[in-house]
Length: 401
Image (cartoon, rainbow, N blue to C red; front, side, top):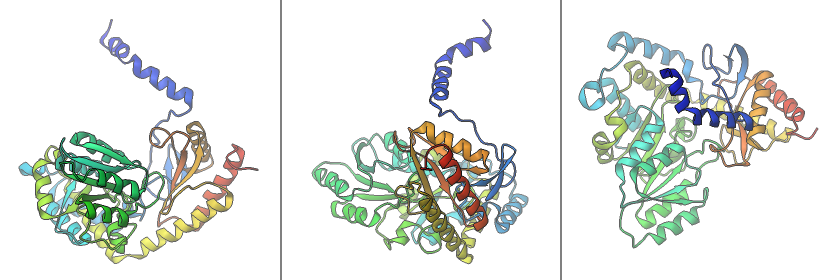
């Protein structure tokens, strides 16, 4: 038996699971982007209206970000050559962290290689087996993984149910260990906003640490995109703020904001920070430029919300179920995963890219096609997308004819 045949035999169980996905109609192949991440983009050789990216403000192709990346690369090279704690902390990394801290109105900030690493690395670093985490049932996978890695005791409350979260905290009053109450700022699958004011009040009442993952709120909510803490005017009352540099900011990475002690501790104990090479200087420079754009071009955020409201109204008028969405993340809920993937494939053939999402990313029976409009979509593109959604929805039986 050859080595290649032996390896295939060892992975027969994976092949069987892939076959199961194909039979269920939920198997997919990666769509390949050819060219820029733009409202009208080419995937797999087909030009489509792109309703699948997190490029909310269109910054992936902004000339100021391009220029910053090129200049930094020319000046500093293509990579930092080490992890942050050895020889990989460049002045430009510190400049970015200081800029984000000022933007978020906090003492300090640390940048991670991704938003996933920021969440998982922070929760697992600041808590241990004797501690307790109170977490929304629909929190992001990176939060869930961080909770598990911490080995803390996990208490899940029903989605956005402040009273339930407070009840858990009340029951833990006499129990030893630190308590962390955590929520998404904007939930990535439903597009609804977390009930941060009520959760903050509960955390304060019972002495819990309050943490919010603002990945999908950064650049979207609050003054110039400062996030849910600013949106709800809760400055100084949320101890841990997580954000992303790879969605509205348009580049790559994640960050954690909070007190100087928190950030210094993460420098010492957050494993993704300790064991991953730091950002290339071109990435850090383009992130710095993005925060300048947020301050200098607030009309981008207004355009995003104008397009969002227009598209939501069009979907609702056609009869689609968009669930609880309050933000540019707008799901079209269809029920079964097979239907969602079929709908997504049919939309693509008609010139619209919108991703089908099913279990386990969302609960069974709540599969959807997720759409995200951006500030740079034109009304003509949105009208065309709405026409395709309606026509395909009727054809495959999602809408009544």
